[in-house]
Image (cartoon, rainbow, N blue to C red; front, side, top):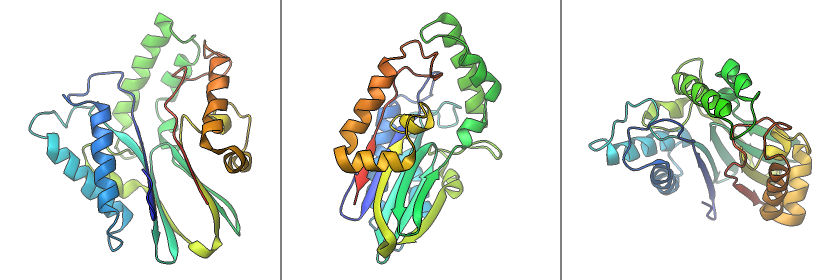
Length: 248
């Protein structure tokens, strides 16, 4: 979602297990995104408090029908950027990347805490080709290990049912007069850098500037298609949801 003074990007977590929720991931992401965008219009509210209030509001909408204490309760990563008078405020919670090109250089804001969890299970899953029974079993073990570390001290933090997760978001402010351009990429869109190692962040900004987000995602899809077994570039999904936003 984008408006004149804000960008909101959410990416729902893959559900490999039960969720305890009758609505599903898409419902959760849609509700949280719209709520967050609306509340972020209040420039006097900090971004963490805005996210906290949004998580609470969505939780209240399905608390009576769903088990919000279920370890697999729907969750999403969040990036929120807001123009507030003379500064650009940003918030990142989960594995989404914000790239800010400033007069002082490139600032990349990324939350890699999830990648530090379930390492043994992740490495085991990487040994098997996508679609194999061994891969599926390993991915399930990895998911359980990740969920055990989700929204816990020493683990990683995402927007789910507990609003206190917002306190662990990465936040900052940058003077507007120093900013040249900004990009927000979900992990699926960031694969050219983070997974395939075929570009760096300045390359990504130039690609977005010259050809836009559609071309970035087209290139991601081309490399994914060239490795259907996921063995050249080890990954948990053959093709991941990809969202890219570019603003100048």
